[in-house]
Length: 275
Image 1 (cartoon, one colour):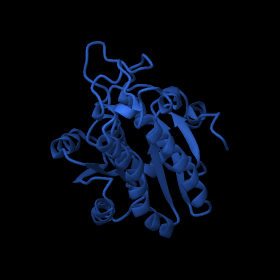
Image 2 (cartoon, one colour):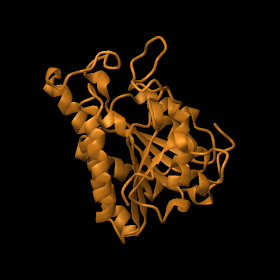
Image 3 (cartoon, one colour):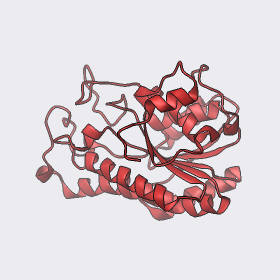
Image 4 (cartoon, helix red, strand yellow):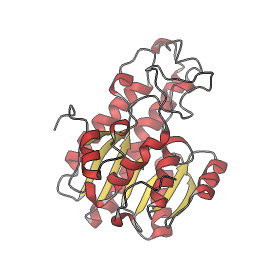
């Protein structure tokens, strides 16, 4: 873990759910939060081994618990909320990270565009269910509790704007566009409740299982970012330092790791995002 990450006292004992926390971006965010003192519930739809590995790798004053749950199933989402409250006695933050990518459609999507009319409708539905309905289900299950406590943070993990409209990236790209629109609506719906909604994205292709394994692994944008770049921004977004921020979009690759948190957040905030 990175010992140079800022210290946020408010993260001590803070309760966080991270969907898709068994690998990739979710794994990095979970480990960073545990090191910062948070209590983290991570979910995965299938792989109990991945969850167990993350729990074993966690080091720090915080705590990780795990649960198998499919975010596209609302009953599973309610079960995650109940398990988190039972384990930690509180819920403060929800990180909607679980997602399905274009590999479900084709293993060669980065080099051969997947035309939308060639997509299997069942695979299309699976991605939509996970990437759009999943965050809604989790937020729907968690928000009544957060509102009742007058405090909470929902952080939705998105993708680059170019990916949303890149040829051959449907339905993954459009599903993230929907997530971003949903986030703006939710932030307005939650105005004056004490619950915020923000977006966080890596800022380019990232070295996760969403990309096919290949020699010289790269995304369509030519980049291959480290998932670890999500660590610093997720700490700030879950901490009290972000309390007055909602309906905002943060790009992790623009986070200034050598700056104070307020300056780093300002640099990573997408200034083109409508206020």
